[in-house]
Structures are given as C-alpha cells and as structure tokens.
Length: 96
Image 1 (spheres, rainbow, N blue to C red):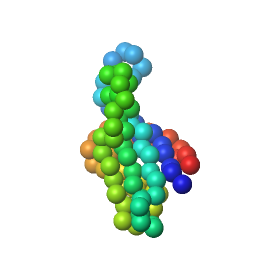
Image 2 (tube, helix red, strand yellow):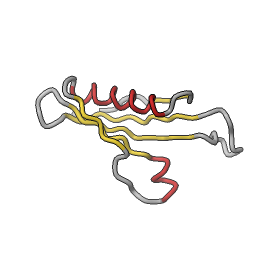
Image 3 (cartoon, rainbow, N blue to C red):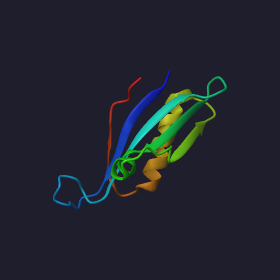
Image 4 (cartoon, rainbow, N blue to C red):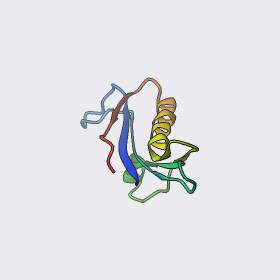
C-alpha cells in the first residue's frame, strides 16, 4: 500500500500575494520496498515544478530498512525538517 501527503515549510515574511516569501512545498509518496518490511519514500518538489511548468523527478529518495512505507514517510519528514530548520510547517493528512 502506498502512502502520500504534502509537506509545506514557510517563513513569516510575505510577498503580498498571500504566500510567504520563503515557501517550500513537497509531495511525499511512500511505498513498500523490494524486501519485506522495507519502505521507499520519494520527495517531489511541487513548488519548483509548478514554477518551471515542467515535471521533475524526486528531489530525494529515502530508504527505510524496517517499518515499511510508514517509516519511510516519517524519515522523509525528518529529512525535510532538518533542511528547513526555523520555518513553520504544514503537513496534510496522510492518504492511502
């Protein structure tokens, strides 16, 4: 079973367009890995792809050796938290 959610990181300063100047928006898709119990998560940068009007591949891939797609999704959030320290965060509800 694959899981997915969106993760958005943003700052306080605004551009006057209802979006903060600092804005990162990702789609994270996690699925079972090739071995039982493993998981793989792909982090897709949505805001860059939208701005450039083209589809891009994953900006990063996370591999979980145990815990399946649920753990891979958690590890993707940890990865993004590390790279966006000091920013506020919104995470959508996880979908199956």
